[in-house]
Length: 64
Figure 1 (cartoon, rainbow, N blue to C red):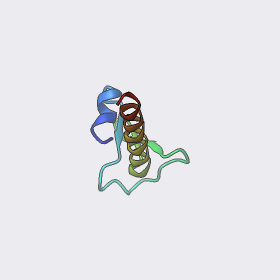
Figure 2: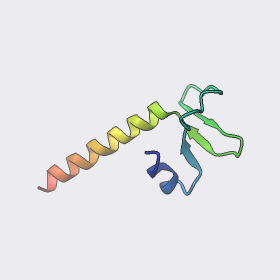
Figure 3: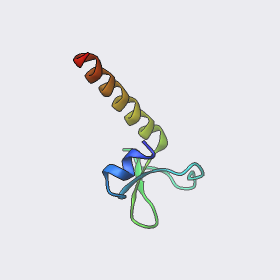
Figure 4: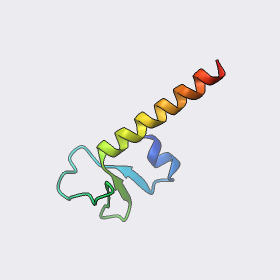
């Protein structure tokens, strides 16, 4: 998701950097960085990646 989110959002959404623990995320798991971009918590991005993989697997198994 670190690569997919910036591509599908045209650079407006990013996953938090590895050293980005200085500020807290809100209740929904995102925050704004100093440039105004939306940063998503790495755990939330991992869950989105897992859901994406499961959906792709289900679609693949459906057609084969």
